[in-house]
Length: 572
Image 1 (tube, rainbow, N blue to C red):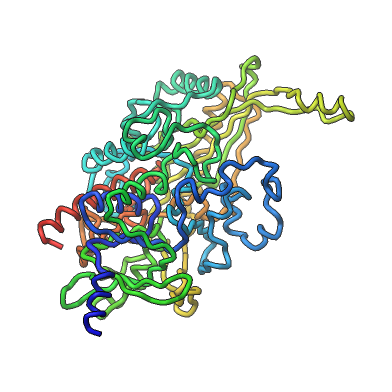
Image 2: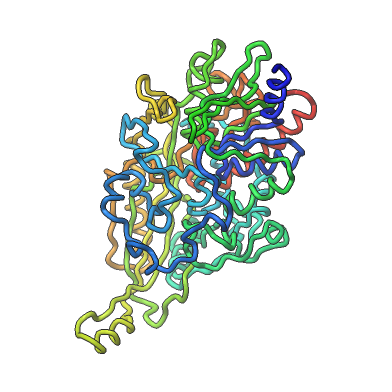
């Protein structure tokens, strides 16, 4: 019997365990297996295999039961998930349903989740901008958060590394606040976007550039992408269904199959991580406790290093639930800051306008990308009464209408003949929020989820800094559109839009130089438990104005490389 137990433990022992299979988890799996480490990847949701498990990817609109519309019953049953822009009849199977995964909203927070292999990498908007030195230096300069333990120079080589593998399209714009990368050819701006860009250069002396967005689409696949089995983006704009071409980057099409090819990866779907096991005699983590989501049976798995990539809030939850005599308030939580300083991106406000020119021009086809206005406020010096700044998306298209009067053949003819109106443009703000101790997550003392794990309590809200930033966005964008000759400029704000719909939540397990004020060191190791690494959004000290996913990838690759080297030296 004892031999059977020994064999069982051996079967459940790996060199490394990765918790989560989304954007950062996929990179952990790829890097660790690539270093020859036998790696267990735990995913709480079901398996989703590239191409095979994209059931709607080639369906036509009329083949959907509700012609692509969400039925009222589905909306009523999922008031949180259905607020997400990507939740539609063709993609609903990639989102968790509200009732199945409860959490506590101490303040309104729309927590958007995708529990399956690949996680939200199947659903993301694919914006991939590098952060700049101003983002990493910002907290030390402005004093709004603790100082980052790394700078742009530390992460730059890893940006290049992940960009080449993932495939990022963009233009080299030479902007200090938005460093260039290893780009595939960019998408093209529309004529009205080019016009706006030219007008901004003229009126603001190139200090407010309007560029084509940088995104994770293969505009010209390279040999490394063909080796992954991926092909050129077909500009279908059906990305949230899962792309059978691998035209955009996802864990499913790229990092996970690459890791599987090494023969070193074991993937276990339906594995809800309960907690990390801490051995007080060894003074390090030795494994994880996992609940099978189907049978509710708990099993322990063991490894020398553990990478937490469960996505920001779930990573916080797992650490908070990993209690022991040494860490009664959560693993690594000696300073009581675990779960605090949560930040997000403020997507609450937009602006729209029309342009009367280019009446002989329209766009052809579709484009999975838009233009982008990098942050221009408080970059080089403090110039407003709010801290930090905002970036913005920008895109334009022709307004169209059809004559729907008449009957029969006359109506059919009218419906096939579009009437073009003015160009209409729109812009949404992506504002940096300030990490604050009052924005936190914690475990509810009474409520449990279906697997017996304490529910996560979320207490995150806007503040005065966010409100001032919204006012400034309206003022500055109105001025910019006016100078560029746009008309019918209208600002929009939705104060009832709760934090969370940006799906850019970050923090709670922040990096830092001082164990008294941070949880992780410069290599993403818990200060007080060095063989546990956190490399998803939970590790972020501040949150920039750029999309965060590319930074998650680069930080993960950097940390995994360090972990493998330290393991080889027997330092972990």
